[in-house]
Image (cartoon, rainbow, N blue to C red; front, side, top):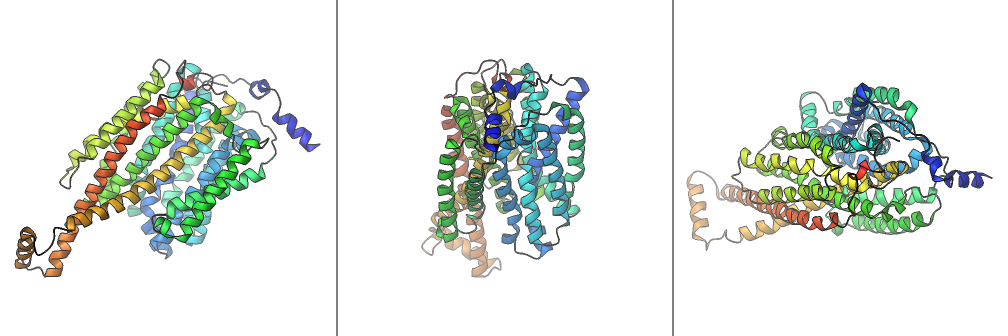
Length: 531
């Protein structure tokens, strides 16, 4: 009997899934609705990066090593990565608005508990809860924004969503560092409480009558179990790989095997199950897979460089965390100024062309960074950062628009969840690859540079003699030279990664142009607009 009921629910005709038509919001309701959804997005994206700079303070305060402290980041990332692709299924089960509001409420509670955590074990447990309930918030904010605007203004909705998604990762470390230095690390979690409550209040008052239809679908227990296994193993592997020396570690090899085997079984199960927990059939749409692949790969390269630049500035150029944040902050200026312009024209200009502009500017910026040296002043570092804002403005809006083009409104939460999962996972890969390559290439450059420091080299012996004459011992002189070689080696390694990244952006142009041309500007078509 229950099978018959669930079968009927799942196989009801398509119009039944779309028969409730909501008119777009207008006037002050549209402004407040946009503000509430953007605020929730900003809170979640900010939270994924704000804790990074606070790990030393958290570890010291709770009496654990920094290595144990990094589980505060890993636990959130694992739980978040698992829950994001479940957005589509959860939306059908609970409704878009109800799921969005419940997720924010639980996120607020989890954040409050994180701030109160008396030890590392409880903090990690609360971070798992926080990551798990945060999953649907970003995809649903995107879907609800699109439903709030008329089809012709879908580009504006995506531009506003993109601005919050771009600015928050830059502000995260800056704000996290300031709060930790001036107040307490607990407040990086407490600040979510008022922000979340404001977002809940406005969202529920405006959207409670605009919820999507609920379908009582059966739970795909096998698919859910496989998702938890392979995503969990992969995310832990990515977070702990560098610390454990990658495939030199038996633990990393075991995690890699579990991730690959789990992923293979997951794909097979989800493609054949009647009620899959993740709708992989979305990849049948050429624009969905080309948009998702190009957005994810580009974001992976971009995010790897976002992490690498402040690391280099802080470790080898003498910048503090706050100074590094200030140098990187102007990236948001051009992005904020140009995103509305891109959103306005997304219906008139081919999104593939706009995305190509982004990739070419990213390639130029990274090529400029590949010319840096250890004498680079703030102006030299700032110029590519400001220009990068142009690339970011042309990045999210066209690619998200392309990804969601041609999809019906009931598919948007699932598509948004899946594409955001791919993007965030690619960001984790990009971070791990960039930081690992940076260290391995630096070791190689260090070895090459050190070959010339020997007694047969006249310049080296004269330098050592003059340093000893100034009062340094031989050991001190060699240590000072080694520090200088380190600085050069890590600079050269960073240059290698910047240059390779610029080449990758040029190659990614080919994937964007595999997409079909979009009529009416992508998400402004079937996917966008009120529903």
